[in-house]
Length: 587
Ligand code: FES
Ligand code: MG
Image (cartoon, rainbow, N blue to C red; front, side):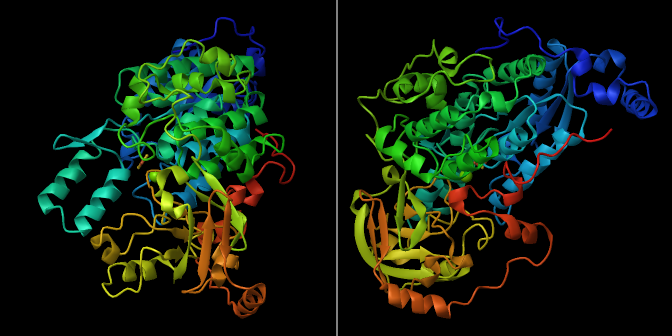
């Protein structure tokens, strides 16, 4: 693993230029109280004087199993900071445990981004180590840190160990959905189900399928914001605490070097991340988060849906990891060489000159990496899928675009016309799904609406609509589904997601009626509601906006400001370019 960079430029900052020196150095009453209160905590001038103060933004909590090791790991980061002559200070932040937080962690991703930005702005810190991994924590931390602009390095939580039960490996999410269908079909006993619950998540760390967590950790590393190899190390592997200490050492040097995110991020780094996303068979959520991150990095970095679609036609899926692959998990990916090895294979599709936190280029970082298992990380000429990690569909029902993961759906649904079966909200869907008399066939397209950024609220992961039990019992395991929701990165199936603009604000999805025919043509990147423009205009005129989801509090504020899925679901006022930059605080 790359650690401190011996070739790094000589320190460009002097101790007097440290941002934290504005709090600690002056001989005035206010600074005196800062020093006095630091001494109240048991520190002395030898801790802070002339040293970079490193914020460790830790998203640990008692209810986040994916970050269960962060309480110990933060001590390893501190060790590294101290080794390099810095002053570590842990700043806890919103934990966003994916499975526990309702209605959805996505509602709160921007709150974590705001918290991160303001924690760094308001405290006497010079740089930051960002500790995250569970789905929304990675983009939340990075969005905030990019906006604040201090040197920062991201420490990924790393995946949990392989799951297993009765001699079978189990993958987070993916196998839960799969076995739940078996249970609904009456093929699993209570005892068998309990064994699956106990075996599918058996160590700290993030989901170990190629879900949103594994995808976003890998993309953070590809963007150059994490140390090489960091994102693939299983959370409980002894390499992980050593990597944590290395992050602590490196951030201190980054402060002296003035290596801020704007010096690392470029359009090239975002295009590298898109290419990596495709090769990983990424979570569909990666699109929303990368778009949001790119817009935080500034207009010169901004990417859009079409960049993903273009890359998906060019870049093959190389990572044979569930749910795109049928067998392997993140532990196998790590043991096969991890992300640096995959990026080495992907080199023809990357700009290797892109900058990274090591102070070296991406190409330098991955120079020695080698794949040691060709079945887990495929060569370019023997990919898992030649193309099609993601496709962006457009048409009269989704003028702002919609997203499908062709590599994870049954091929017969890539071109299909069928009647819509429409649900206005999730409770209506849930109530209908077990109805033995539901008028539905495998030809139908299930439609869920009012599940977008404002309507969900927060765009919940409801997009893998459950296949009606009646059909499951007939052996149906996939069918077309369309929504303005997201889906978990561990999900699979013919699910068309992120339909924009969302129904809740009057997007065309609001106008679909049960029985209308919808044509999906993935090769042509088209989705079309087979209803005349005149009829749609009449339906639009009669459309009544639903009442707001929240009338006070954070949810109300989010609804005023959240952008649509194709723009990354950030709040408008948090995007770079909204108003003048925020000045440093008066002290
Ligand atoms: Fe935390 Fe999946 S629940 S990463
Ligand atoms: Mg998830």
